[in-house]
Amino acid sequence: MSDAGIERTPVDVAVGVLVERDAEGVEGRFLLTSRPEGKVYAGYWEFPGGKLERGETVEQALRRELQEELGITIGAAHPWHELVMDYPHARVRLHFCKVYEWTGAFEMREQQTMAWQSLPVQVQPVLPGTIPVLDWFAAERGFAGAATHLG
Image 1 (spheres, rainbow, N blue to C red):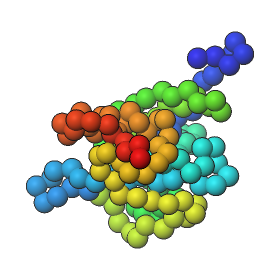
Image 2 (image 1 turned 120 degrees about the horizontal axis):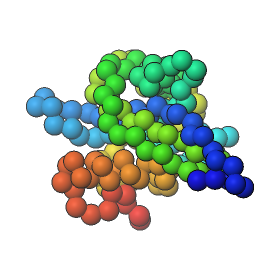
Image 3 (image 1 turned 180 degrees about the vertical axis):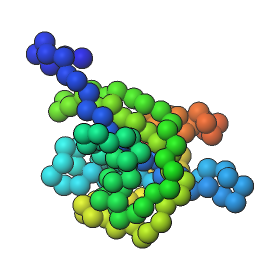
């Protein structure tokens, strides 16, 4: 898309989809965090992550961002999906990676809130770039119905 006729180059963002698994490896709840005050879309729920810095890979950026924001050290990041989203403030290319292993205690270092969720998610409002991820989960898990609770 263009803004006043000028094409906007997407900003690359690494996104961590932290997923709990049971002893048999079946995926369960996933982590959502709220966007902190002072940021665009403050209070909206999303999967945590952040922008890639020059020369970083998606996994390196995700490892750095989750340490900075949540105080955890992640294991392997498993590339899952990519999505380009046009927001009024920016065009972003979201690199979603599933993460099943991490160490450390969660610390909300940006005064955000965290919530372990399953479908349909109970937290609201959900960032527009998060909704497709919930739909991917629904498709993978055979979940029928709305991926978010609108109550």
